[in-house]
Image (cartoon, rainbow, N blue to C red; front, side):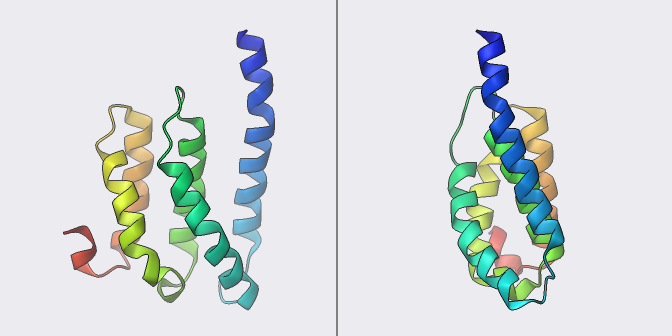
Length: 120
């Protein structure tokens, strides 16, 4: 059964890698980047709220979110700062160190560009 789970993770890993590649390849100031981020962010935040036994989806989602937060202009994500913080804060308190570490990295990127009240 371990082999089946390993096999099932290949499409997820491929999709996560493709998504990271797309985000990395976008020109942050291009109009299409704004459209992609606007469509991607709600689904990404939704994924981050779903716990799975190995948390692989959330770990991949945090990687993509970190890319978005570090690469794109504040104005592009400004309306979502509160939602992003609300999703990240429970993950920062996770029992899993790797989940905590990635959530803290995202929160650090967010805090560099958000209004201080976002985390109150």
